[in-house]
Length: 217
Image (cartoon, rainbow, N blue to C red):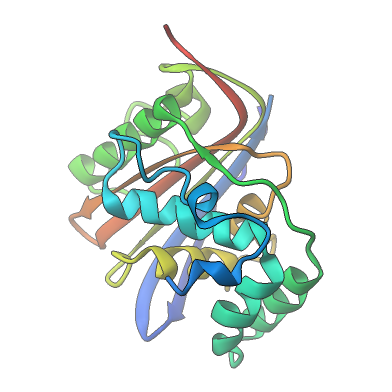
């Protein structure tokens, strides 16, 4: 199992944010994003296992995925003074649209387990307090197929879906741009999200992804 653990500390929008990304292989007018209807972009709105912020995070990622050029123009370009934002902008305007992320209950449960673990034990990394990896946690609720990945974000102004996604896309301080590449990965189709409080960083969000996920019956 191949993992990469990446910690970045970036000063974005005037606040301190922290984000992690790792991978494994086994709200403006949404009408601007013309490749999908608003209803299809907002794929998580009707599920009962996510809160409104978590649903907004799914929507925001889908806006970036289905029309990368429009998203870059509207939400990345305003951060032009940051070199990583300029790089992100040029990458996204050349990126072809891709399919939306569909919400997944099992993966969301795995993300929620980790978010609660981080809150309870006051840490912020992919490895759980029980030494579990993100794929270990996913497989408690089913079986992933193809690729799997995890993004984590935390900070004092992170209780906002656009802040979360823009920060991860710009990915300042991370040479591999692992967060950006995860969100813009053509081979990831399902996602789980868990956002909540953190004793040190006040707020955090865990996003787990997979190509496919078969939930336990």
